[in-house]
Length: 142
Image (tube, rainbow, N blue to C red; front, top):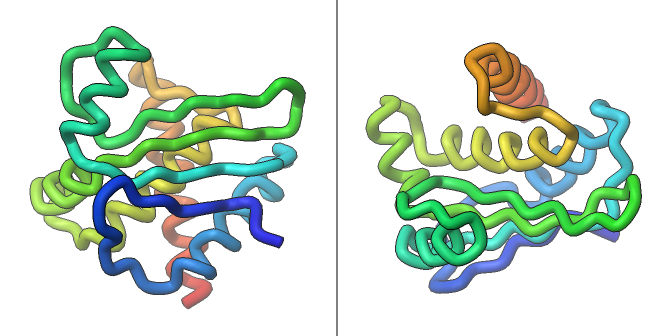
């Protein structure tokens, strides 16, 4: 049974290979040697995520992703909120496809749960390296 779930606050959007993406996220956790119980990805609008950012983190700015770890023990349980609008804009600004950028953000949230951070320059470089590594692995499986 899957441990990764996708939810939509508004309408869903076209994303092919959802089952394979969910399975790959579970593989990412296995490769990182991090037990996984459940992740709920919630795809939402900029405004929806801005309200969460203000309410829970006291940040008054748009972001593409917010990760909440809900684990009580070593087994990862989390909610990850992703702004579909922000991902689309980032894809355009980075001259990449929406599919590639949504995968990068999905993996980014999972990597946070595996212990990777991105506050310092060094941490951000490692996070980007891991994102690229998993994007490459996922795309090579196709």
